[in-house]
Length: 136
Image (cartoon, rainbow, N blue to C red; front, side, top):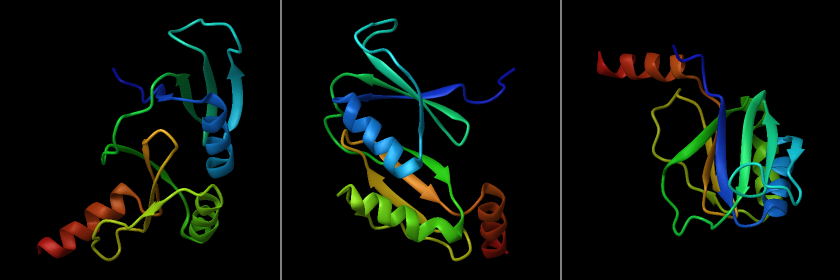
């Protein structure tokens, strides 16, 4: 039986750039750095973000950007703070997709390796309830 997500791994060109990204945007706690050792495929670092284990491994960046993404839940009150953090790193904030009013707001942005992230103020229950209202 699946208990939940164990961890999410991103392949990044530079571990230090990824470290700066995760710490500056998400207040990530770095819990492990392999240094020159290689216990897995390449050098790696582990972070905790909101209790979620995030791994980054040295490798080639994605060749192009896609809509595949990871979304983290944030409060509406923190929306402006996170937008400022993203912009402070010089990252592009993508225009949000069209939304049904009441399903929450999102910040979409790419890291230095073309991974797309979303910070979202809504919940699954809110989105489904809002969609159900529209279908009536």
